[in-house]
Image 1: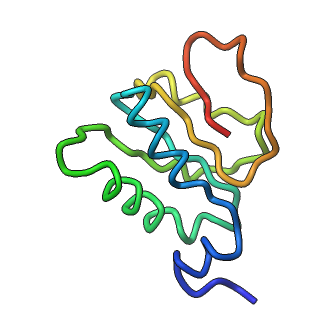
Image 2 (image 1 turned 120 degrees about the vertical axis):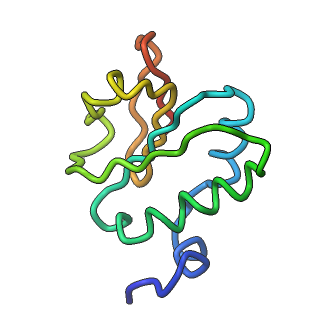
Amino acid sequence: MKPKNLQDLEERYELELDRVVSEIKKQKPSKVLLQFPDGLKPYATQIQEKIKKELGNKNKTDILIYMDTCFGACDIPLESSSLGVDLIVQFGHSAWDYSKRKDIKVLS
C-alpha cells in the first residue's frame, strides 16, 4: 500500500531525516541537493520542507531537489558542480564509497 503522507512514509522507511539535518548542521554547506529514486519523488517537497523546518529559520542553506532520473548510488548528477552544490543527500540507495571524491560530499 502506498504511503499517504510523509509521516506514513517515515514509519515505513528509514529516511534518517535526523541524520540528514545533523550532517547539514555539522558540515554547513551552502547548497544541498536531495536525490530521490522514482518511488520517493512524490514526497520530495515534503521531505525538503521538513528538513528546512528542522534546520530552523536562521539556517540559510539552500535545499534543492534533483528530479531527473536516478539509477542508484553511483549516479551523481553531473549538474551538481555547476550548481555550486556542496552536499548531495541520496535517499533510498545502497551505500557507495565516495571517500575519494574531493569536489563534493555525498551522504547516502
